[in-house]
Length: 126
Image 1: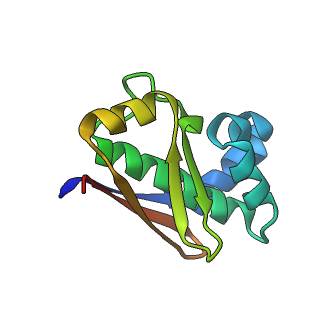
Image 2: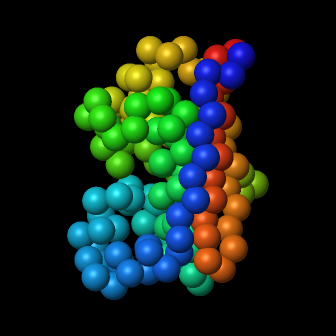
């Protein structure tokens, strides 16, 4: 059964601006070490960050919480499995809320263009 669905779109230009303006203060606040290693290893770091940012926002929409309830950016980690499939791992308050809702599986789809990172999340109970 579907518990929640979320989608988000992030402009790559806004991420580039945040990186140039704030540097690691932005990156380190939003992304985990694994996420930063992945994004920094790619040609267009800002595009990869935009996609991960969108995935985190989409997850919060699917949970129905937004940024309230004490969820931290780094409690939502977006990585890839061995075949490149994007996956979300939760910890802290994000994981706690997910468990309370009965989430058993998190489905994540990410796509991008030169200008946008887009992510959709579906939360499933069975």
